[in-house]
Image (cartoon, rainbow, N blue to C red):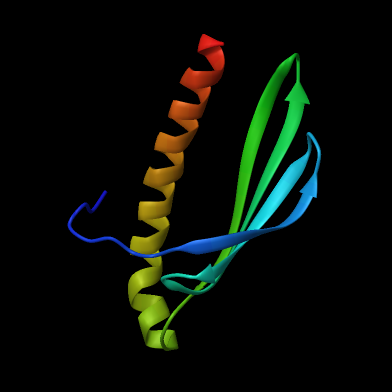
Amino acid sequence: MDRFYSVRWVARHTECIAYQLFVDQQIEGPMQSWTHRHQFQTENGQTRLTDIIEYELIGSEITESLLHWWVNSRLEDMFRYRHQVTQQECEQK
């Protein structure tokens, strides 16, 4: 991950169903829009966490076409790491 800059990112939880899901939306941040849905499902006594992301980059279609692949790869890295940490923390309890 790039560690040479910081970005202010403010989100609000807009939906919550206990033990099933919650949704947060960007109020202020680096994207034109950002919605992140966190879904939880129980399978064979374990919990599966699924992240569904919808976003739009700031700028034109050219910006979108040039940066979309990079943003997706960064998001994949970030969520892969987050899922590993979450799994490790949950398994220790």
